[in-house]
Length: 331
Image (cartoon, rainbow, N blue to C red; front, top):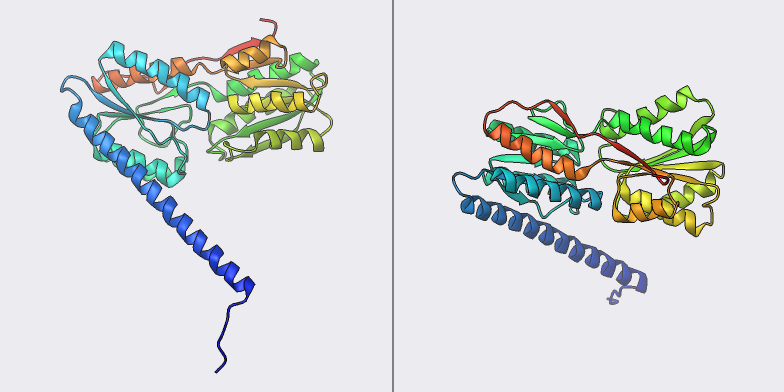
């Protein structure tokens, strides 16, 4: 009987499949370890929390890292002033929807007193949030809302107003005669979320000013890679675009860099989001026309302050609006 030998292609395919299997196992072990560490941390913090100091768990996405960092600065300040212990989730979404929900499950199992949640991957969080409600753990949503849930309140900004302010800045920058592209690369892009409300505000102003045309809306969940490529594609395939409206700080900086790389600064105005040191520098250099600041420090502070009232049995508003600030490069 002739001995059967694998050819080169078959050997390569076997090696490839083996590599995929090993990589999948490694990722699975990493995520399992991450969740286990988070649960251990939650249990340890719960045991260390004094009987008179509420233990509040905060889970934020890292979709917009500057928002997260500034939010936590305000949250920590409020916790110190109100005698509360904060536990901040290490996992900020790098493992995807299932991991994000599992980290929240660990906090619930650790019997935290309250939860402050940015509901990234909202659909995957719904069963977990219901568990928190069943266990009597109050929770507050920030930046994105879950209006159908039994959350104690929502702390953030008026998203429709955000869109109208961005559109008005675009109109000011161009005399309301422009083709505009909108970049919103975040999570929860369904019809009833904050992203849709922002787009609704932009479209409302555009409908009142026929010279201001929205010619492209770029949405998606890929908030970690490809911002520059997305914006480069817009400017390449929509050469008439004279305004870029960016709905996150990350995309604002990416738009500025891409416009500079393409030597289009004379022809394209950029409307950004938030006021980080990097964005302030771009305003000072007149690379951006203006930005809409969401005040994440205040959102963090007010959410912890509201949780303190909830835990004391005091009433809180259904929506705590921290307000928006319009900042131009001439301010």
